[in-house]
Image (tube, rainbow, N blue to C red; front, side, top):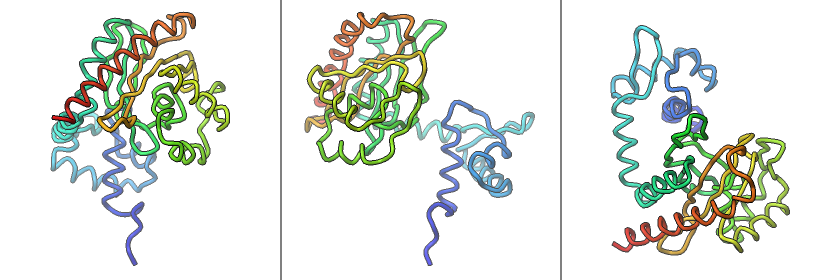
Length: 256
């Protein structure tokens, strides 16, 4: 009988590696075992193998582990080969300078999205995201701005599954989401306030590839207290212009 992928050694190794992509950089055997529901001996054995390959490094004084130089090199290689990130990176740098806020690049991954790039605001109190973090397309301006430009059959599939409730302001009703998507398609950008993280807002616009498909989005994320809702259209103009620039750069790269 074939081994269940969820209990396979390969899957466990992947689980351990992915645990280091969160906000907590250093983790111990006990914490990893608790998070992943694995035995300490299993986690320790996997970590030793990862240390030998350089994917994980070990601090003997603290008895904690973190991603190693090999993992960093793999990440840089992935970034270098990511056409969307390459196209959007200089654009979000300019947008962050123009707005004074954190800007992000999100990539569509099936019926979810992944943060692949950001330029943090220089302000002392600012919004920051975790690169590599997956989020549903139904939540946040970044996700909605992608979802609005997907084929109707994809939208139907996304809205068929139970939708997560992150805050009291999260919209989870499929009909209400469809109405929002129609508005986003008409104006070309999405806006959310305190729907994924309390007291934070974001404005996002889609990035399209050479086929015209929405493959990602570009956003500005900021604290609610720093902008009045009346200023959102002005921000949206900057975001849409930046997303169009990223789209042009991506299309040019894909055409070679």
